[in-house]
Length: 148
Image (tube, rainbow, N blue to C red; front, top):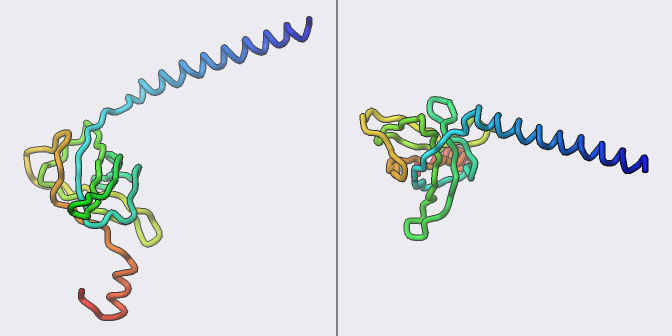
């Protein structure tokens, strides 16, 4: 009988901790203000080095992420969907490029803002894009002296 009272007591403590943890998580999510995002689209000649979850950065600050990446079977370009924070207004003449954090670092999508007073809206497509550059191809051009 003593064992069952102890089990009930420990079970009650576990339930209280679980409820407390759930309340804490829900409050911290609402306090951090899970930010609303809007999707924009872009096609790259080469999306080498990026994948779903890759950062989208503007002036070095993360403003979104890549949420989808697929091959367009008609144009043979990598079509991407980028999720951008609603608080960030990107001019509609901006350029997107795949940039590297360094020789050994990862890649990210860089937003190079334009000068337009019109901004991208949900579902718009960025037409001016620059794909990734392969470091191996650059080294081979240097070694062989080729300009192509």
